[in-house]
Structures are given as C-alpha cells and as structure tokens.
Image (cartoon, rainbow, N blue to C red; front, side, top):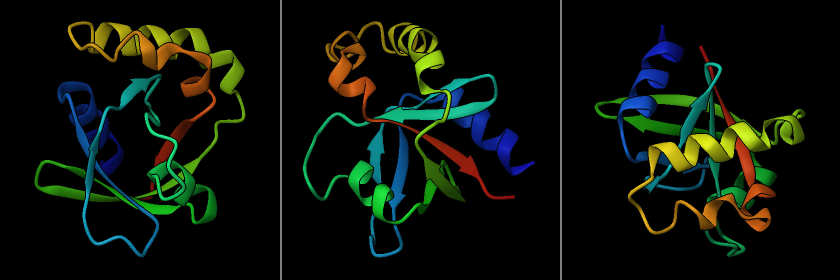
Length: 120
C-alpha cells in the first residue's frame, strides 16, 4: 500500500521531498520519475554533501509525499544501462517545460541515477 501511494504521488507531483541518510533534519525537493512501478531520481549537483553521495554512504532515507513520509532504501539500479533510454524519456515527458529537463539526460547525470525502494 505504501509503495502504491508513493508511486502515485511521484507520478502526479513535480517535486518530491527527500531526506538522505539518517543525519539530515530537513527534506530537499527534487525531481523523481516512475518507471514500471519503480522510483528513480538523478542528482543535479555534484557536491560532496549531496543527497546522492550521502546515499552512497548510507542507503537509508525517507521521501515525503504530501503529508506522508515513507522510509526508503536507495541504490544504484543493477539494470541502469537498460533503463537509460526509458528514464531519459520519463524525465523529458514529465518536465518538458523546465529548462533542466534536457540537461538531466546527459551522461554525467545518468551516472548519478538512483532508485528508491519503499520499505513496507
């Protein structure tokens, strides 16, 4: 049930709050897309303290979907190479009016793709 609620929220919302690791106190709003009932995001920035780098050190976190907060495990998808085209298309369709939609489909951002698995 939690997974379906989160998937629906991400599909219907432009931004979703994320909290990477267990040390952060606040949520950061980021773009997320859904493919085959799986939630993905790409890092825009490359700072050492970015959500992406934090998840590499500690895969536990949370996403905030409206009034609901879900615990997640973050991982680099094992099938990332198979998902590149579909993920690019999902970003371009969902964020077509945003200036960063095309740039987030570049290789440096593809390399920073992460999947968020809802802990039931």
